[in-house]
Image (cartoon, rainbow over all chains, first blue to last red):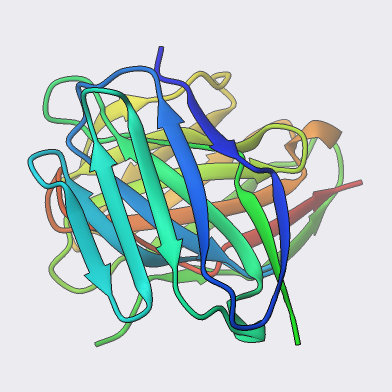
Length: 114
Length: 112
């Protein structure tokens, strides 16, 4: 059974800092890994998708890496801003056969202080 | 282009009743998945539909069911509601199995 762990559970940083969020998973046979952010009471916003054959993806101030063999991914946020405050979730996509199923970590709650 | 649309946004139901939630995926997307989010259990997979066929199902009781129509719109039904079914129900759509998943804003279900 796939298990996804995110560390830390909560993080508070001053504005402008660079930070790293961690995600680990137990089964390396995945299609891809996706990072999301969730604002309170809202749905999930997709940030980055990394296919299993890729090592890295970048979008603006965000950079995500994937090491499938060790079951790890990191999300790097550069020059953090108060608007980055949210819960960040990683999810690995692995179903049975051709079906898809996202397994989520419990998230990292990020607070960026002005 | 329009995103994933879930209706209604909020629902209050009484124990024992049943409820139907709706999800309209992004145009052209044929895969629709449903997830339950609670403070205690986090996000848990319910089921996935592709071209009107359920391809995968999570570990939930038979009270939870769903279906997908020919236009890819999906509905989720929960019968005999329990207090523990109170949660945010999220729908995700994607074009194929290994492409990016896009989520709707969710339906907040409260069972009293």
